[in-house]
Image (cartoon, rainbow, N blue to C red):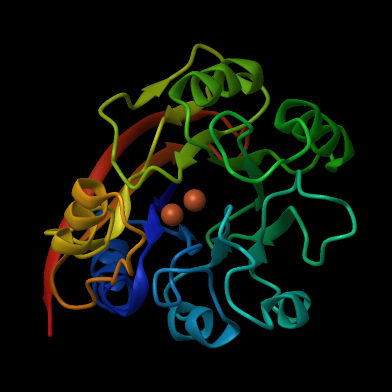
Length: 263
Ligand SMILES: [Fe+2]
Ligand SMILES: [Fe+2]
């Protein structure tokens, strides 16, 4: 069984790339389930129900991150989006849910858990290790396939999480840095890991933002608007995980990168 995990979708260009490329990837690679981090899918900041609906024909489950509440009013609509999980270790009074169990049409259930890191992250969160431990204890034993999107800055925190969860989950895949890492590995206990899946956004950009805007910000130190690059060559970064849905163990994880011209 194969699932695809797509790195942070940035803006309209990213959404368009997902809509066009995912059906092709599903056919070509034999993918039966697609999960995507959508924390920057609405104009580069946060998400809206409408933005997710645009991609729901091709993506099964969306995850979030530290930008989850960037769009005004999203807190009021998140509970009406059944195929979204946001970081589980946010304050317990926040709306939404941190994990969900979803049916894979090709076989078996998939639990998707979203966590946020604590190291070098602007928002405080509960301990992601303790949080995921509690979630795993609460899952029915019939759920064998478990994917964790660990939305975090520090590679050390992500690598530690993959060892912590090895033998208990199918995959730990990192998001948030928007840069795909060259470290895909299956741990001895069958946990597939990649420190960051990368980004689905403009190929010529700084993490999806206009190069000139970001360079000006760094060279002048002045606060400035960082516009999102919405068209041109858009890259879709992802991780392809092969797993056994009976045992929940992964056997392979490989990086995926596709590029498309969006006008
Ligand atoms: Fe993030
Ligand atoms: Fe992001």
